[in-house]
Length: 112
Image (cartoon, rainbow, N blue to C red; front, side, top):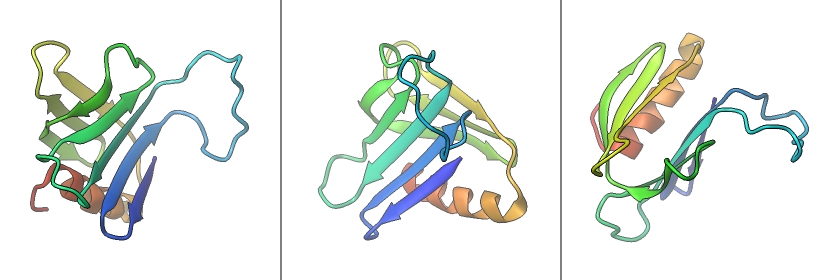
């Protein structure tokens, strides 16, 4: 799991099953991941970019609605007709959880 913040304009949260410091092997099967980004530089109507290991189902710019953020899971809906629900489970220490929660609240436009 990682979070990113760039110039108070771009925010990202990423949940990955692979160590980000490990070498990337293009021949290996794709490991599950979820990446969510939001930018505030331009008025884009509040859409987020989402990308997963299933790009045919979950990749692109969408409005997202936070359903639940808890110490071990994130659940959100994508504003579209099918494949709406996404659930991510994770394990974080309290300090990591606090930082992830801050960025998740910014990305989804909710108060902590």
